[in-house]
Length: 221
Image (cartoon, rainbow, N blue to C red; front, side):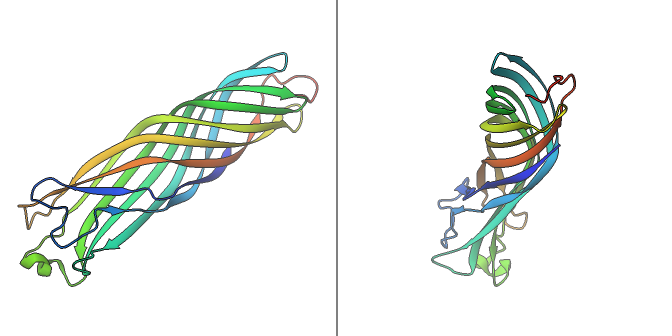
């Protein structure tokens, strides 16, 4: 089992024009930057082999996650107008190789491989006085995208043999699940639509406990 914390500062949601001439005729900001953060917890399973002081193996894990954030930015020309963007990682998992060096009870390792996660992004343009007042028409487009995304991860960690059967570990991972894009539309004002895009990447630190099947007789790694 494991538990930890994930974060990504300035997880930009970037808006772009699809029809029309500007991202916003009244200065609606084209970028909002949520600070995404939250906890995750789950379990892992793996296999290790040791040759002398070198260890190699493979590990898979799946965590429930609530790593999320949102941000709002207001227009420079018309301060009533604003952009809202949010991002959330709902669960997170990896399938990684591990390679490390053992010194008595301590393992120091590097790791990397496949990462996957359940991602959601949502965004909107709004108006503090009500959308009907914007440009003399209702123009408050919204959009969202939810999908399972695949990417990569890499990091390093420490693992310590507590006893013959149990170990404790701490590790850091950087992950990148790529970029997603979607469209913002308003059914009451179909003449203009916009695009939004965001990248899912960040950092995870977590600790865990492992039970070792077929552990050595003595309390070494």
